[in-house]
Length: 243
Image 1 (cartoon, rainbow, N blue to C red):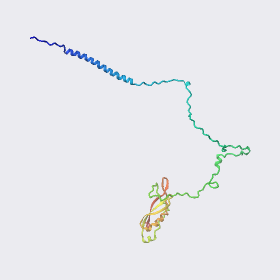
Image 2 (image 1 turned 45 degrees about the vertical axis):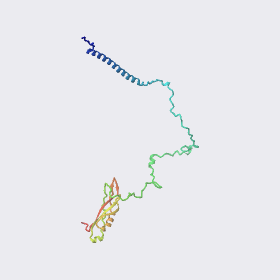
Image 3 (image 1 turned 90 degrees about the vertical axis):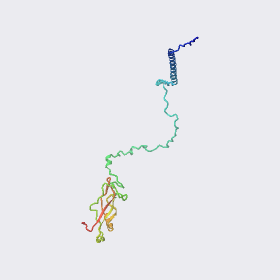
């Protein structure tokens, strides 16, 4: 019986290592080539896209080679306006020659001492100091409000605050009481108006008002000036003044 032997193929571990090294080097070379080609294309396109910087040229010239400067005046001048001349020259301020015979050589200008020694000019036809015949009085604008801030309140003047007259009918009836009177004191300290605020008996109202209008006060002071204010004064009616 005959036997057949299969042909052997030389393929093993050494062959695989040899082929791997061969193809690895080839693949590395190819990959490096593609990488260099891509890098070159990238930088090449960027270089082509760059714009060239402008080049400035400077020319040096002498001032003698320069032409005349341009005119600063406007080429379009305004139209001329004709002004009509006056028919006659003005005579104001024009010196007029005077003969020497008409000039007074003794006429001079008064000095400051002579001017100060002259009498002052007063009002009216003649000279002299001005005299004021009417007294200056402070005008009142009207009654003040109920409350006026003041720095100093008005005070009654001694000897100028008479007592009210006691009504005879109230004396006979033995009636006593107190009347509070509101007095408007003007800027000169005089009473301008009086009115009753509170009264114990109506018989005493008018005597209290009559007495209040005869009082004198020092004016109220505010901001270094007199002001008009309202003050309240009680008038007591007592049969026995010692009580």
